[in-house]
Length: 270
Ligand SMILES: [Zn+2]
Image 1 (cartoon, helix red, strand yellow):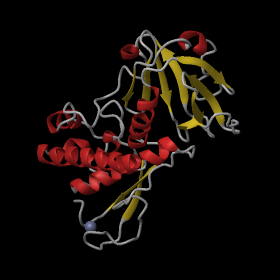
Image 2: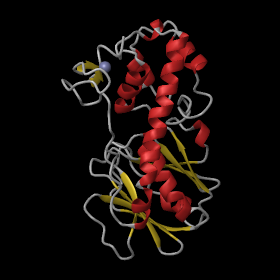
Image 3: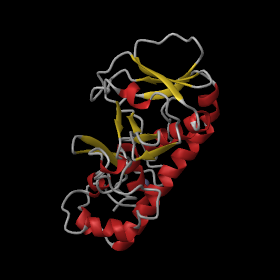
Image 4: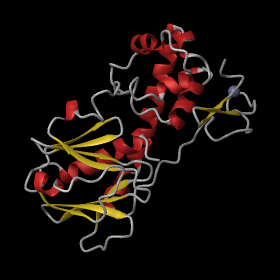
């Protein structure tokens, strides 16, 4: 599943080739994504120039001035540039044809992604209630500590709640809690301010490292027609049940929280 670092890498890969270009045409081969692609999407956007490409959580926001196109990659989506004349494959559901012969193509085999448009991005129901971006100063220890107060939910589930902070997916939550030395099942209300300081720093570090790793694959991504692969992370705990902790050699444990697998080291995380 594309997580925040993949979405940010996608944004960085698309922006230089698309910014300032006019959109000429949209081809929707299959509108049945998580929500239907608006039938008038092309009527809303064709002829407009892309002013910028922003990201909020895992939503890509294509700024066409009066209208913003929202794209979410869902469980299996990817965006890339198609070669001139390259035929669409089975799961290539949407093409955007820009000036200069540039074709942006959405592939989404499982169709949990979304392509929507809005005239007021701040009030859109998918975006209006999102928490702060994890890599901005708004996400700090004081903020997280305040959100932890009186919450009986586990800290892992809390940091995966997009209303608390966006973009901390399952892998990054487990990895960040390892780096912070906090067990995933700890009740949020039990976290001290010091623990919140460690956790905020760990989340920022883990996400920034993943984005940096994605940046190293950016060149291939932009200059070839190959699909952007999801990042292969060097994880400390995620998906390592029974294997020795890379710090202390204690076997990594796996538990299930909210139907999602969590991994931790019982010695390093107390
Ligand atoms: Zn350990």
